Amino acid sequence: MGAEEAMVRVEPLVSMSKKESDIAEVAKSVLETLLNMMGMAGSTVSHIESFIEGGEGAAAPVTLNVEGDDLGILIGRRGQTLSSLQYIVRLIVGYQAEAWLPIIIDVKGYKQRRYEALRALAGRMAEQVKVRGAPFTLEPMSAFERRIIHLTLAEHPDVTTQSTGEGEARKVVILPKEQAEA
Image (cartoon, rainbow, N blue to C red; front, side):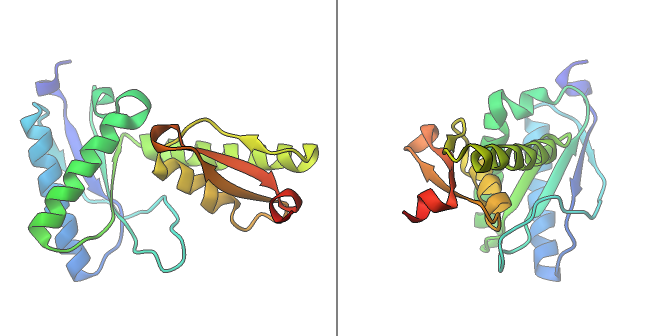
């Protein structure tokens, strides 16, 4: 099936205030326009649900989920294309709305599945670090993915996390609490 034949559905996934709702509509419109310019025909359907937990005091993100066929190209290698699309939408929306609200773009639940996989990985690695008493360094990750690991293990009684490295080589290190305090 070609890109022009793909059916795309963009779904806002968060309950919002009036202003946030207006920004969500702008974000949805911008995303639909970009998808159409890329040759992906689409329709939109609203749905209210959030899958990402924020830190305390964090604004709830506007989440747009793109559904359709042959959308792997929007995700790209390790989610890089999706991150770029999200960045572009955030810039355009911020300029048009003259306000900033976190915007997350997901394609066919990719980020939701990645979020759940990273939370599970964090839990498994924390247990290994606890049992072995030695730090463990995860693979390089995006800021979004590192944040998931940090938030997941923030309240863990036996381990702590820290990021090391520069740029795209930045990684999360999971350490036993007694080593981090020493």
